[in-house]
Each structure stands twice: as structure tokens, then as C-alpha cells.
Length: 454
Image (cartoon, rainbow, N blue to C red; front, side, top):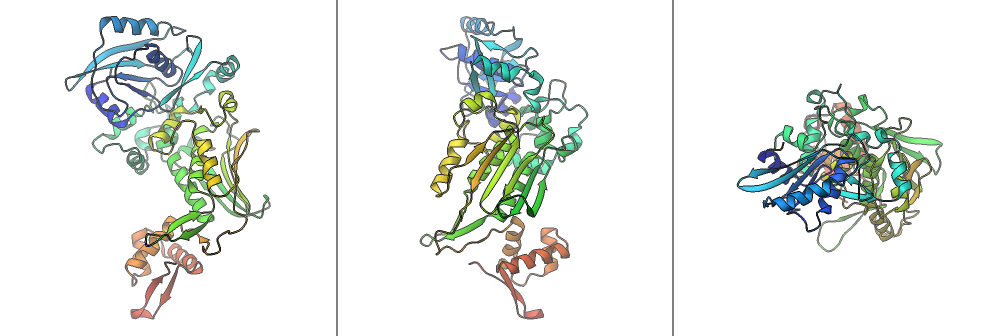
């Protein structure tokens, strides 16, 4: 049973794949039953009545007649579903809890329809063929819910990654690590970490899932003959996302436009938001049961292709660009909590709009065996007044920042501040000089760095 402190923590963290808020008992009790049914078909969850959508604890009372109506509605779920319903006093306010475990006899139906949890929302599936195909291999549906009893999360947990997630999800520092992980529902009933929790928060999930990495490859020309760069990103999924995004930024062309007296504006040849959406989709929706392939990002002179194992689920294929359904609801919800997913089912239309607004062809999708999105690059620079130059990596930007603030900074001091060896630092400085971003002036005691801000 949840305690008052548990409920406060859930209210602060917000709704997710395993938590749903209701301000009061709705006029249509079936709304509650649909949520409960969707929890049972996923990894379980809590329906908290007496909390607003914004997470404000208001409290509510449920009369005996309303409670009887709720229980009667829940009894219509087939097969019969065990659950707990109780009230908790939270600082003098009554919050009702409906606690649902992951169903052991999936799928569960209500009023002839199937409900599944997708992020912080429930989706309704009614087509018989879609239902049959979705549940024909029950143990293959939610890879991210599989328990990993041999993994010791006290040793595996990547604290820096968790801190970044907490900051992105706006989780209060007052909430303990144990509470955060427990509220995210990354453990099963026995306390074992799930595969989704391991993929998102462990230091080296690739030790358990060797194929769960992102490979970034840059080719010369328009075919796969000559490889210019080949980089594989492993670690927690959030770090794979960050690594792949930075790799793309280092390879893409960027122009700078000045508007009035304000700061210059970066104009990427392909909008970065398009890549961010595509990478998150690849990591959240890929088929992790498929061990023969990884998420890949391939860059050519004329295009960028982002692929992930697994074709579209039937309900998504039928409503492509309008409805979203993930193979990995836990992973999807964690990306949602980190504010890397905007709205359910809105990604495809948003990518299309961003590409068209940038004067580029809309994305092309291939769902034959692998799911691949192809993004066309600019064939030529349209605005000759904008000077195209390679993007800086985060590390290069930091080096320039130190040089700009302290022109007489030594290489040894740079090495100490960025935790790099002299060989690596000299290589980075050589790259910056080749780009025309910095040059050295003077000799010995009178020497210094001059950063080219243009």
C-alpha cells in the first residue's frame, strides 16, 4: 500500500506510464475502468483520485454508492482482474488509490475493447486483427518489463546519468534516489530491476544487451563504399541519445544569421529538432528482442538515414502519423518524463513541418524489415551571405571558452580543466586551428590565444 509520502512524491513527479491522476470520480465511471484495464495490460500502476493533472493534491471523498459503482465497473474487465482500492490521508486531504499489478493473464478486455498504456496516456484498440497480432506473443510485447534478477542496481546505477535525468524531469533534489527509482516503476514485484530500467539507468547496459547501442557512420559520396567516420555509442539510453546528437552536430553544416543587435542565430542544414525526434523514436520504439541489428545513423553527402530494428505495430501502421504505440512503454515514458517527447502521436507531423519550413523535402519512411527515416540534406547553399562552417563539438566549445576568457591560458591548464591528456588536447587545438577558430600570437611570455568569433 502507498503511504502519504509516496503519494506526495508521485504528485511532484507527475503522470507517467504507471501513474494516472484524477481530480475526482468522473461522471462516467468507465473512464476509471479503462485506465485500470490499460495498467493491467502493461506493467501495472496506480490510479490516484484527488490529484489534479498538474499534480496538486486537492483530496476528494467517495461515497459508498460511488465506490460500489466503481467496483461494479471494474468487475466487467475480462478476465477477472485483482486490484486494491483504499484511501490515504495526505496532510488532512483524502486521496483514493487504485493499485493494479501487471496482469498475469493478458490480454484484459473491457466492453469489447483492449486498452494499453502508452506513456502517460491510454490507447484503445478494437480491431480484432490488430489485437490478435499484438498479443500473439504475450511475452514479447513489453521487453522493457522483463526482470533482470542477476543485475545488482546498487552497483550498476549511473549516478551522473540519473542526475541529468532528474534535472530534465524537474524532480526535486529533496526526493531520495530510492524514491525516484521506485516511483519510476523500474523494478518488478520481486524487487528485480527490469530491462527497461537497466537500459535507461545502468552504467553499461551493453554488458547485458550487446545490441542496445547506436552506431553512427559517415560515408563519402552517396553510397556505402568509403567510410569516413564510424562511432558507436553505448551506455544508458539518455547518453546514447546525447552522444548521437553531438556526433550529428559535429558533422552537419551550420550557418549563422544576425538579426539586429541580438545574438547570432544558428541555422542548421537540417533542423536539430528533427534529428532529436527521430533518435528518441528509434531508441524508444526499436525491437530489443531483435539481436541482429542496432540503431544506426548513416550520413551521406545528400541524406541522413536513421534506422531501428522492428517494423511498425499494426495499429500504428494503420494510423501512421496519428497514433503512437510503443513496444517499450516504460522506456517511452522515461523519455517523456525527460521532456524529450512532446505529445503522443505528434512526432511525425512535427518532423514533416520542420523539414518543409526549412525548405527541405519531407521525411521519407521505409518500414520493410527495419524502420528507416530518410532526411534529405541541402544540395547547395542558398544564401551566399551566410558563411557555412563545421559545427563545434561540446569539448571544442569549452576549449574556446577558456581561451576567450583567459588568452594566456596554458595547454597544461586546459588539460587540467577538461581532464584531457596533452596528446588529446594538442589534437583538439590542431583541429580548431584548421577550422580557423583560433590562432596563437606572440612568443613565450608574451604569447596568447586569439579566438575568431566570426
